[in-house]
Image (cartoon, rainbow over the protein chains, first blue to last red):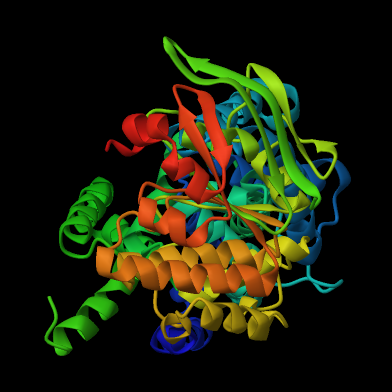
Length: 318
Length: 247
């Protein structure tokens, strides 16, 4: 059982090592990799729900919750700290995930997806309209926080946040892997294949899905806090439905069958955006669109599925 | 007389114009293998669905060991000790047979962990014993999807046994299985049930199976119980022979 995961785990290790070392040679990659890791953490939550066969089209609400937790603290309290922001983002999105989750886990598939979308749009409207507290569409600037009492120059800070994101991403990746191999994780996957049998074994599928949903919301909030620190801003756009779509897009790009798909997808997405935006201005979406079409047509299991496809052809299979 | 495990009283349910249960009264005694026979559409599966909480009867009550379980949720009824095996095996197809079994074991224990590996559950040895008991141990590490139908049926039953039930309800345990395999499956099944001390109710169409393996037979017809008795009594009844068996 574990043997099946070994090659991909090796790829994951290589990825994390590259993320740690490459930016030491090219400074502009520090922010790029930090974003990849932070987005990857959010997408990990999407991949987790995909195990249960459910797609959330509203996960930007947790992303925005995490980002605004950091922003509000900076605006109203001041003296922020990276770790504090991450913890705040995680806690607030967990609480909101629990509340929203109690509603959405009663539904499946398109209804699950759309209800998530509806909840996220409520949050987005609140962020847009409550101008007095949120500055509306302008968003709130997130001043560069310190870490454990130290403060940094912008040059150092980009590395500090990169390594914090790296540590959090590795922890999230290992945690999710471990969860998916646990009884609860296996039950989550059982929802996809046979929910009726799960109930007939005496387990509440809703409860199992709620646990998965809350974990996924938590990851969204942590990733959101990190991105707001990296980009030094939180705007309502963080909670807009296109953002939710982007996370689902990345999950499909990377592949939903394994936790590493989240990071593989985020790496592809952010890298294309980083370079295409520099050279092709507004047409980077076009490139990503083409990439997605190619992925869906030729690698329906995403980037991480390419390897498995490769293995099969070596065995002479189809 | 042995203890009454399950007791249905005055069960009624209709779906539009179809009366699937029209005053069903039935007691299931501890330790027996009760067969339910009857023509298609007589309400046999409906009875199993009501007894396991999948359907709510419009009238009547079902009790199990003295507790009223009418319209309880399937998972609540499962926890009380009624397990179910399905006509079409209901497995977690993307997981291995052993993982299927361990999910059942974790379900029975309650409060499943989100951190410890499923494969490290202490129940693994017991699950392996059950798979061995129904003769599918060699498939333990295979994905449920890859198994032939007959083996899936046995895994489905092993999943039910993993719940340590007092009563097992089975919907056509040998349907969809080649006739050459039927006897083998029923032999394995009845031996396993006796060994685990599980009472069973099974819906069956094959009268050979009924004669061989049931202690008692209940004949369903048009939502009513037409006759209850030993297989010899029931199969000798001319009305049953004509209306149900079709001889």
